[in-house]
Image (cartoon, rainbow, N blue to C red; front, side, top):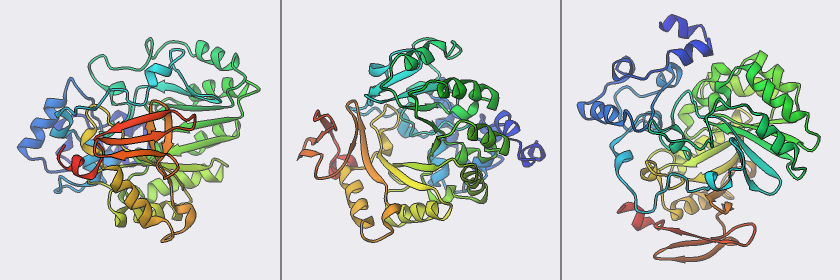
Length: 368
């Protein structure tokens, strides 16, 4: 089996994803407690790991950043008072089976609920549960025609983001069918793809795939490196191939407790991205999603990290620190903070709407 994976066939990697404790033991040592937690997650949260991504795990360290991002832990089952399956309002702003129209001039198109690796910190964790969790109005297999018609009928939409799940789970031909229809709409200026495949399964970024995208410029690709350990020869090669075909690559990290919430790790990540010509774009404050709350830091931690970066590294190495709310993404800065009390933080959105974010002071996070 491993010889098949070693041929760098992304479809073989996907087919042979690790989805059992027995297969996982070929890569790492698991304690009896870890085994129990993984088995407990069955029927609640999906988990799967590509052989490539599993090969980056430390076989003996349960706190390995790759393991923490991809393996279920007991913390996922601990409820948080303020958590929500959809804190960013995807379902509130959904207007068709797949289209989320949250901002005036741009939309999200949910392509699929499938991923090569089910990240434990996913904002759309509900989307990938094993128990009826989905943001689709109807099933995923429905035609895209209704979604395309909606975009065509709204000339204010100039920017479409394909996401999911991970759009690159689809074949080149299936993706091209969607992209070509979007490109035929005169007012759609930009098509963006949100994908973690350059990190989780870089073999998916093939010459043929990039040549297909190149036909429909301007295409932008946003990916999701969270830790310097994820920057490998394979992931660098994938990003280089995209760039050579004129596809800008931007990175959107999530601030994750125990993974990248210290200045040394964050600097190493940002500098590593610049070395492979990937622009740090956003640093997301971890959303308080049900099953994800244990990854949240305090906002103070994020602000301190940003203070440690500004002036201490290359300007374009510094991402914008944002908090995603039901009222949109809000950069965390003195301009957007309305009130910061013991109970939480009130932020002002681009429309002037105020959003209260509870339970985010450092001492409260430590005791959550």
